[in-house]
Length: 269
Ligand SMILES: C[S@@+](CC[C@H](N)C(=O)[O-])C[C@H]1O[C@@H](n2cnc3c(N)ncnc32)[C@H](O)[C@@H]1O
Image 1 (tube, helix red, strand yellow):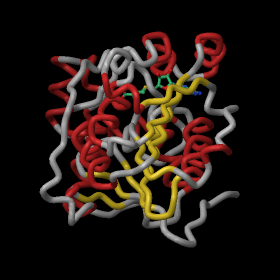
Image 2 (cartoon, rainbow, N blue to C red):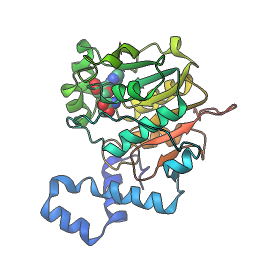
Image 3 (cartoon, rainbow, N blue to C red):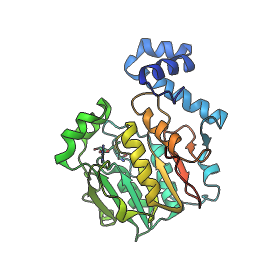
Image 4 (tube, helix red, strand yellow):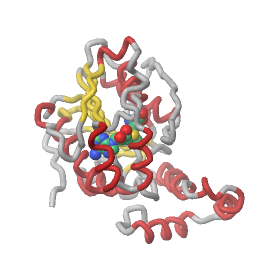
């Protein structure tokens, strides 16, 4: 149901698919937060079933030899973004485990994840993080959904890493990811984090660029995976494009991860 293209139909089917009495109670007591409930139930289902249209695994199963990795977390406010601390911890652990020499992030926002990449990567690592220049914000806001437009408005690029010593590792890039020239970064990134706009056009274009940038053995990680609402397009784009059976949701999170292997190709129509 989560992969239905039409949003209204998807949300309706999602409500039916995940309905229970607690849903009803939540709509009664706190309707503003009830919208997120079917996504949470679906993610619980995925963690229990293990495999449906994609795979769901614990971080220990995904990185079995990642024990004894010490991570540092800088917990900053979400500022309107739902980004719980366990997801931040997984990003930090993946960074520490991979020890990449280069990281590329699409979607800086205030720099919370960029700072955490800097805190957990090797000293010589370079973190490229891109966001919209001020001049493009109005035009991009006009073409994206309401939630994304609100995030773009609240975006103060790099605010959280700006005055930090770790900022020496961070290179801020500006551009609209739909038009940005990613070629200079091709086949050179150990880790690519896709967390920009969430409509299908952007999510699939960002995914194609992430695939071209990541080295064999490197990881792509997406945020906002396995959601029913406006952000659902990320799930569809990732599942449509990536080789079958290779997308793994980190259980009970909105993070999906893929490790590039020799011979992997995107499903391009
Ligand atoms: C969800 S936020 C990123 C959050 C950040 N990674 C964190 O967790 O702290 C998404 C960001 O993507 C940016 N964005 C949206 N559309 C974009 C586009 N077409 N190109 C580049 N950046 C875009 C927005 O301005 C916003 O700052």
